Image (tube, rainbow, N blue to C red; front, side, top):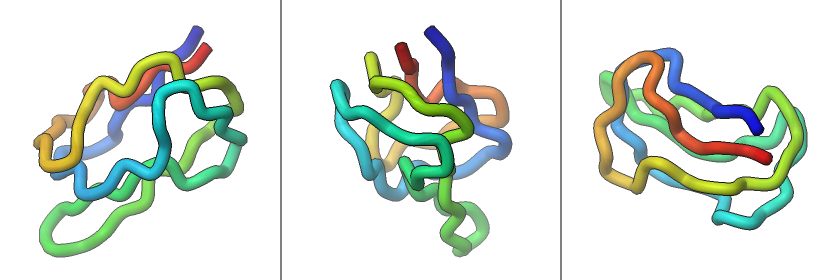
Length: 70
């Protein structure tokens, strides 16, 4: 089990995956918005999405958990 965390404070603009999805290393999984710029969140490992910890419109800080992989 591992976690994907944010590396900056931003708003969660769009989540591109669902719980139970298989994601691959390098896959775009979400889009964040900060200072009117869209920032893609890219998976750094493969796995099955066990739990998505945020929803679209949430504000997250650096280090917050976006999702849990198993």
